[in-house]
Length: 174
Image (cartoon, rainbow, N blue to C red; front, side, top):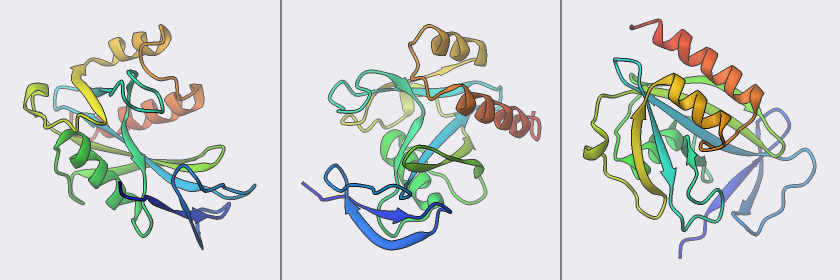
């Protein structure tokens, strides 16, 4: 089993030089780690969501955004690109992976990214230890899944901020 190290960030998102082991290290008050979410949209405006593996400790079996924690030494972009490829087999680069925003959470900085692809869900290469299934849906269906608890509730501020940025982004090419 590989040990995953996280860089510890200060209250401004800068590396402190300290690292912790995922799952065993403790973040002190005022310390954070970096997490990334990647929202995937199609040319026709659908959103790709994934159902987490039932074997996951955190949020097993829940529909959620693609993402995870950055490992030590990794930039936000590198973490987003890695998570996207590991979990779904989608390759991204600086031309098609765009950072939407950064949110400061309880003990993490959450960078939200967006990319576009029209890869059919059945052609995705799922990392079965992380992802049970994936599907394309329209925004109203996603909003319904959030309301009825089918999709993980990241909080009203998160969804308001992210959905506004997704709409702005979609307006640049739709």
